[in-house]
Amino acid sequence: MHSKNVLIADSSPSFIDSIGQIMVEEGYQIVKAYSGIDVLGIVKQQPCHCVFLDLMIPKVDGARVCRYIKEDQRSSHIPIVILSGTIAENITHLDDIGADFYIAKGPMASMRKDILTVLRQLEGGVTISDTKAPVLGIDALFPRAVTKDFLQYQRHYEAMFTTMGEGVIEVDADFTIVRINPAGAMIFETPERKLVGCSIDALFSGHREVREILGRLLRAKDYGSEKVTLRYNDKVLRIVITNLIESGYTEGLLFIVQDVTDLFQKIEELTKINRELNKTQAQLFQAAKLTALGELAANITHEINTPLTSVLGYVSLLLNSMDDNDPRKSDLTIIQGEALRARNIIKGLLNFLYPGDLHLHAIDLKELLKETLLLVSHRAKSQKVAIVERYGGASPPVVVDAFQMKQVFINLINNAFDAMPEGGTLSITTISEGAYLSICFQDTGVGIASESISEIFDPFFTTKPKSKGTGLGLPLSLKIVKGFGGVIEVESEEGKGSTFTVKIPQGERKENFSE
Image (tube, rainbow, N blue to C red; front, side, top):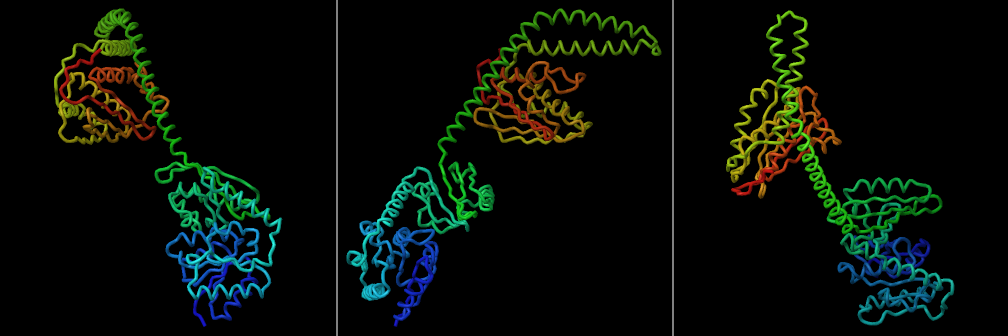
């Protein structure tokens, strides 16, 4: 008598019972399995003296089950006996399966004799490593043409499945992986035998979109497919998921997986290059507009400024000669205010076109920034704007004109104040980054509309009321900063605020970048 487990795997419960009875009579304990997935799970969980396995079992066929068991060091010692009705048709391919014994299904008396023969040989320690795997019960059988054609078709399908360049995964209605080709195992960097029998959820854990697609396809009554592209570890995968319908119900799902990481990297590189080209194009366009504006403004500035001075002079004389109750005085006050605004626009334009001689010195930009904040502290307090200063560690000096640089800071800070009429926070941060010192002005104001971002450095463009903005502050600031070899970058979101970053080259420099 024996107290050893024998695992019998077949799709027919009655056949398992009949064969099992033979082994029970010999004192063996029987463990039953009705699919390849069941076999793999049982072998992992409990010791088996041997496995009797049909080739045509569901989900994972017997040949693959045999291969997975033999490839796993924990189970490779377990003898495998193929007990199948297709032995005669598979006779030339048995060596590829790799089992220890083969028994052809036939009359029960003949099978009983062959099964007992195998069990006695196994008790004696005979396995495939000792001799060529014997084939029992084959003498009275003849190959069937229909079965042979079916198996040939199956091998053809297997060859295509194995050699496909895309990863292919088949799962059952319980989301258990029942099949995966070598390309799929390579994409997921896991051996095929370790993936088969696992849940597809475990493979795509953290990817909720995959689970949602599986739920929709599993509930579907007709064939359907969905596509998804996702990042998987360091890869980008493009996946097509299709349901497998049988009798109006989804019996499983098929995944076609492509590793498109290289393609996405190329797209990202092209996108980056395109952004740089657009940025360069915008800069060239901006320079062309400024040149045209300079030529136009140089011709008309003097002509406009002279009559404005006359208008302001005569209005001032009239106002001084009138009584406070004169009804005309309010009209003249409006004329004076508008004339002053026009003169300020002309003054800003002159400063923009002719900022004056540069007086370049190596200075500590952080100290200059602190001096500037003292000038705006009163407005910050009255407008309920909290200023948060974050200065990085020591950094090399920058070569700039202190007066013009202070003008840039005042323009940016005033713009931040204007964006926070109800108060807020202005965070000013300095960061030393390689060759540049960055000064970030981040406000919690109204932000800038995305369609306006590309225009904010255009002369006379402003999002402020006409009475508050000339549209020259940012263009002038950009021109000054570019004159020092720097740049101004902007990020903004409506309703959340804006961040303007001034980047100035660090260290002693002899070059004069002014135009």
